[in-house]
Image (cartoon, rainbow, N blue to C red):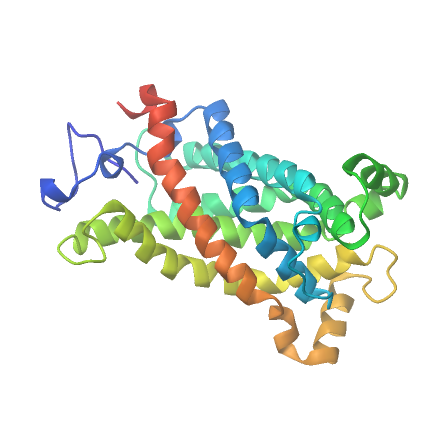
Amino acid sequence: LLQSTTAPRVTVPLSHRSSAFLMPAPNRLSDLENCAIGAICGTADTTLLQSTNYWKNAQQQRLPFTMNPAVLYRGYSANVLNNGFCLMTQFYLNGIAKRMLTGGAREATPAEQIGSGFAAGLGSGVVCGPLELIMIQQQRKGGTILSVGGDLARGGPSIVSRGMLALGLREGIYCAGFMGILPAVRKHIRETYAHTPFGQSEDAARLTATFIAGPICAFASHPPDTVKTCMQGDIEQVRFKGYGQSAGVLVAESGIAALWRGMPWRLFRQCCAVFLFDKISAEVAPRLFPHAFR
């Protein structure tokens, strides 16, 4: 993704190059450092965008719209843990996947970035699933993390793992977007269109790449997210039972568009989030771990 100042491989004029644009590939971070960056991303995302997450979940489950902060931030602690641990896992697994593909000796290709991002997201479903289940149950019914988590644990593995496969697919597509598509597009814009408003600065290229990668990964990953949300909101299985049956109920109820219910909120959140994650990865990581970017 990013090059050393001693051997730049980009063709843009020096005046257009930021220090972030010249940094080496992020697979030089250690596993622990990757986890730290993931935790920062997850906490920042949840703190800034929790309300959009509630509005998306509410629309998917046909719950009433509200502006009450006490309701919007219900499940906030569970979501901080969810996003923090989820992104820690994703950055950790992405680093491992990149090292396996490149041997740690070269920059990953765009295809390798997308593939390692998808694998990292898919694997993170095991971590994210139970925590997101707690958050959704809190949003619907209230309660503390411990009380809700205890009730769910007593339901056994079939309850704790409810919706986990759909969540893994959602995260795989999402991570392929922000770990693979966005950095590759950002780099291409900076190298090719540095003389235009779209690529004249690192943030301009990042913003342009966000509006390309964000809608792609949001649209592709939303159907499994809708199925997952409905299944986790209905642990009693009154309406939603398995994956196929749940998708069938939604389509029968409102047509195929039901699988994209709540997408405007999620699209807005993902565009903000992928911009934020890429900026943290490119500009915060070198300040926290300068030894990895020399």
